[in-house]
Image 1 (spheres, rainbow, N blue to C red):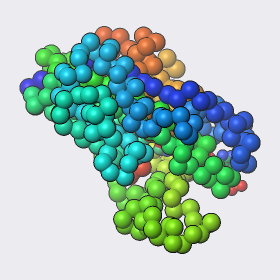
Image 2 (tube, helix red, strand yellow):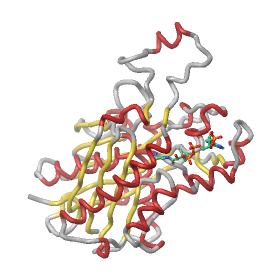
Image 3 (tube, rainbow, N blue to C red):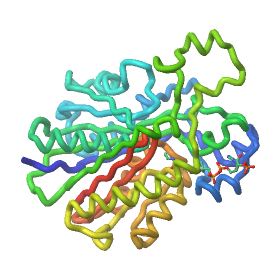
Length: 336
Ligand code: UT7
């Protein structure tokens, strides 16, 4: 048995910055409301036609991560790609990464767990490495939200929150069982599946042909829906629960956390969790101010930035935690 450890991190965000004031020009919203409720100041949106997609952003982040890992792309044994905004309905972006990076014909798996997608992907990679099946696994979280949002006042409760971007990590075999990813903890509660969802197009209720046939200007089924307050209330409880579960599994307590990197859902949620665990400001990494909520990309982007800013040091206990659509949630306890 081995552990796995993160040996390379990278991120990519599109250049186009969209401020809260920019949004107020296309919908009835304002900087004060967005900052007060979410902490977001700006986010990145891919400009249509400039060539960036969920896959290409993931590839750019992956190249940086592979380079920093100091390995060759052909040393990658497996690819895991987490997203809710794939380029195609099928196939998923994992195989597109295999093609675009020119990696040999290794397996490529797509993870559909939304905001907790990166932690789910990390957990799968960790198990493959722990079992000895693979040595180096590339894990990507990437999202292109902006092309699918309702950018009118009708969609403002959701559209102001989400941004585009990608993050990637290379996981590798670690012989020291006290180092690397110590444990991961995953949960779901499908009872609330529709509280944060995008229902159409889907084979369940409405396919593209139904949407076209109905030709209904009031149709909102192909825009994301979020019962914001309900999601918020569940998020604060589940974040705390799953962090505590991870700490307990490793005989740790809040005092052992060096850095918490929470999924960037809402700055108020991060601050609530910070308070619960009595962490100082410098022990929680937040960047939702600059990027909004980038779903599966938010943790790898934040972790990459934290690492670049030398906020993660060898021997540190780093805790990752996420909650979102599904509902799904999870945590990872890492000894850096
Ligand atoms: O990453 C996945 C997990 N996601 C989350 O954890 C998100 C959890 N939820 C939230 O972060 C918050 O619920 C939101 C930020 C989405 C919304 O904040 P809220 O305090 O729950 O606001 P609300 O939806 O209850 O709306 C309050 C008011 C409403 O107006 P009335 O009915 O009180 O007149 C909304 O119509 O704010 C209005 N509103 C807006 N006003 C200006 C909603 N969106 C906007 C907006 N600009 N963008």
